[in-house]
Image 1 (tube, rainbow, N blue to C red):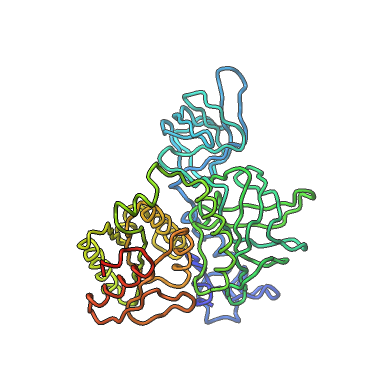
Image 2 (cartoon, helix red, strand yellow):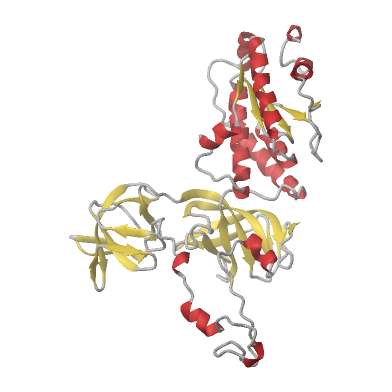
Length: 443
């Protein structure tokens, strides 16, 4: 069982052998389990440490009620969802983003110097800010995510199945917002935790969804903040509770589940189509850039099993093209991780967001007429599939060094891992010339 629950990342698990029917180890220790030296269920519940479950770092205060008994007082009442707030703290109101300073923290038992998670308080500010019920007060330097699009793991609790495109009411942090089910990514087998392709969820099934709301939500990932990372779905007519969800940080799914790629392909194509529709260009078009540079813009992704060899080939390729008077530019993942991706963690859930940003960056640099080169030693079919779509309308050149491990993607140029860079450069240049990216005399 320990191996089974390991992927669920529970911070601590206690095993207690008990019998509810006969009362073994429920209140008193059982004579039938002399080998067990741990606590009874009641003893454990009375002494369990729950302080580690409190988020005292991220101050989140959804406003439940505005109190104004007279012209001299205006307070915002509610419960502290997480974090700590002190008199004198600089705060920001959402969605207006206006800032002020905490003047007083008022309770029925008198004013406080500070308040922490789960306390019911009223906050008085130094400035007159238009804040209503359903707004959220946070620290100016620590903001939640604000978005109308997110993904969540949801348990479905209604006899009528959940399907793509249906609309419901979503209750989150004291607000009711209309939401739409954009995509059922997959459902999860609760017995094996296996992810299975699905387009619907039936009663008591658990799955991962992509949702969109009519108004932005102010949220954190459930793994970071349970209060702002959870929500409930209601039926818009009957008001029956139909589902409960946990918001996930980023957008990702297991790349080994190749069937899922097709589910998201249409969404990704729609994103690219909208991006290109609103793409604002200057007065220099791509034909003029090609004439000036004497080559077209191109993104080259070098991949393979040998990380150091892949990076070295990509860097040497930049130098080789530069010596041929081409505008080549290499950017390594470490530079992207420390800069463009500095706000996201380097784990599996954020891999999808990292790839998206690389793809958007490739589109920009290719549009600028550069030959953009990067090294992705650990790329798989899913990564390259997304990069190809995100780089549209430009094509992506995939150079694979060594054994080909791809199942669905075919490398444009396959090279032997023999450290013969001159032959490698020749093969790459032949492909670029055949595709009219560079002039033939450069070969």
